[in-house]
Image (cartoon, rainbow, N blue to C red):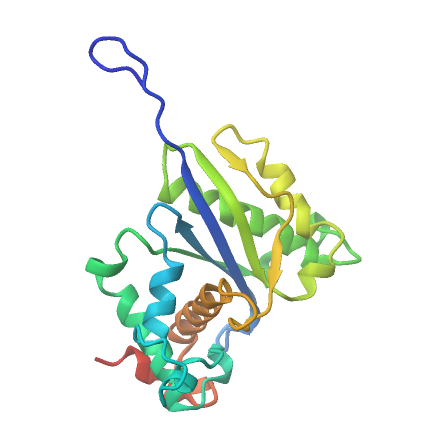
Length: 242
């Protein structure tokens, strides 16, 4: 970029971490079509999200002797929300996201829904059809999200974190997405492989955002397909109430 005097100024690249989760199967009750979903949260490391999510989890109280610490230290998984403790963590996260004064520069989220019933089987591998589909659409989701959130910017992806699942054992998924995207001029990668994390934030602090991604995917698809079809639907709908 040149200024008025012809001096060239190089723009500082955007450094990001990407967090991902998925929902394998949702059946539309009207059409009986099968859907799967890919959820991404992109963290701009110049305005980090992780610290805020951890503070929000614990209400900024990290005293392990506190009676509230253990309540706030539980794994949050949308499909397993049963107790007030996990529901309240989830609700605080949603309130953070919905408050632009807190999340405007920290929270970037993209969800891609794929109608599996509409895909042509011939376009994908026959031995591992889902793996072939997921690999291709995951790559598309990442590229679309980065181009949308940081249009015209040079981007450096430091890490891609994905919840542990069958993708970890796919022949191509852990590396192929990064390999293909490295060929793009405006996207650079510091990592060669996807890092797979459990949802246990006590093992990896980054799993806090993986849990958040799970909750966002869960609540979004629940809104789309109706809470009434889910177990503990009343409990799950409470984090959306104000």
